[in-house]
Length: 637
Image (tube, rainbow, N blue to C red; front, side):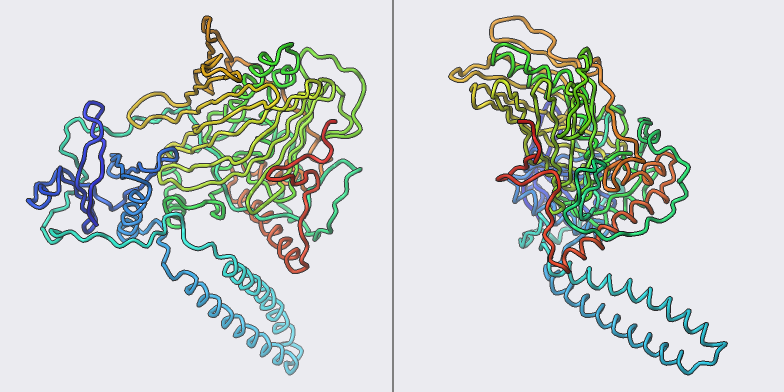
């Protein structure tokens, strides 16, 4: 394959036209096609051991990282970029063994595998029957040995039957090719037979060639999906709520942690750092790379246990309310403009709490029907000694902020959550579908959904969207950044805001920057502009006025949330559900954590199979679908 691409050289010269030729195990480039025909090579990128990366915000950019260097390339559009990536992946797969190459006839291959598995299953059934026949004719001494062998064989047979069923399900739900599965023929070069020597290291003739800057050491990894399947229903310690479907009761294994303090394990916020992934977990990383291709959806890819943070994603969403006074205070302002600005201030100050630990790990993927609930005392607000009988956390003071979350869907993975303060008559309803993809050097998580802040006494609703997350430098020391544009709109008052979470430029500049504008209906110019860092200081400047401190998230006091003790929680409430995994990770016992996680996953597969066999349609316990969104069934009126 050959053709033109733009290549970043340095800050002074920027992007420059180059003619690229993919030949053997290297990507050669020239200043023009004519120079290529004359054999005047400008540079060479070896592909053995190379890693491809794409940009989640720009669909024409891609990178090739090898020999400690990162080459930044750009096609004319997404189609051209993807055709090059697919060709490069094929070469890297041949040379290094990783990147999954999806064959064009994958449905036929899977069909053949299903037929082959069925044949092996039938052979096993016949052999077990022969053993059973042998048992009837065996003498007393031999009979016990044969019977024990039959029991073991039947256990193995049940496992194989289950595997065949999963294969058949996979065949019926085959998604097809990956995002980059284009049927495009490689272009042939007129001069492709010219002899070119591949150097021992990749090089460029530009003396001041630009390569990636060092990654900040205090950044973090974005959440991305590991493999989860659905449970039947959420456990809920509120006795007034009962599951609407029966659920298979599976005996929980003994993980040897019955004397552990599970509540203390969750309160321990100190996480062991992932460190340099390639140095510490190189074999695991290579195994992961062998399962994926650039642009591939990661929803069904199981990620290694060592990257897990010790809490569920549902609990992480509760961190949107780690500053409960900022949230409930939105209703106290007298003018609609002040209320809108306060909602924006609350929202952009809400992201740091979830990712402030400095450790690049991801929370557990919640299972279908899993729930999490908690509450906060509002600083400076007195209790009124009147307790709720409904809502997310019955029995709470009317001046507490209460929160509930539920995993309402597994395919796609959707979490719904709701918070309310009855005393101030403020509530929040939101849902997020996390759609993750492999970007080569990064993992991208698109957060699809929206939230609604409702100020009931003012009859105002503020609809807001969520930024995307990116786990950068996953081959070395991972870190997180947010990216994309979010909006905040209030239809009643006409105010709106556009806020950009800016990803780190590849040629320098700061990470974690944020900029935005707030608009009044009928005005073209913003009434307030915002800039700063979402994990630091954010300032604001009115249309006519001086710049002032909008929010300083690192000096913004957080309020500790209150949860029911693990022992009193329902079996599908987050902290009780994941307690064995959490304690094992706290003790850095990765194998035990993996076993506990696998047990949860296997149980949910079995329950999903029961629902499928009995044609049971799953209905969430706490939320109901409303259009494209989700509504809490017992919301504040």
